[in-house]
Amino acid sequence: MKVKKILVGSALALTLVGIGASKASAVWVGDVPLRDKVTGSGKLVSRTYKTLRVTNGYRQHQTAYYQIGNYLYSDYWYDTY
Image (cartoon, rainbow, N blue to C red; front, side):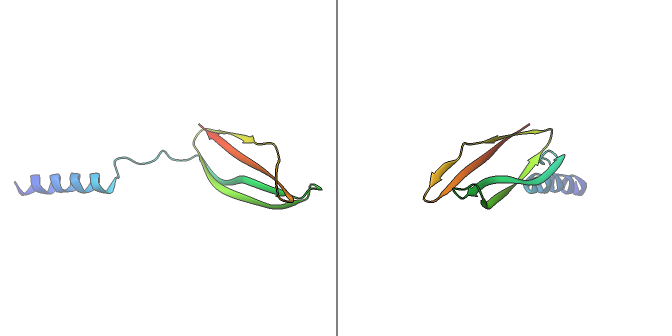
């Protein structure tokens, strides 16, 4: 009876912690561009990054440059698979 209580308690603890449902292991984790800020003459002012987790591969997309104030911006987004 004591062993049964220990097993049930252990199973409940593992379920609550979430060990049973883990994320798929990433093949590659890295920082990728998220947004570029460029002057009107084409000089890169700043670039922001985000962390991307990839299991099999990814595809990068980029928007056309758009203007806000005196700067041009371009955004990136990614499809991972």
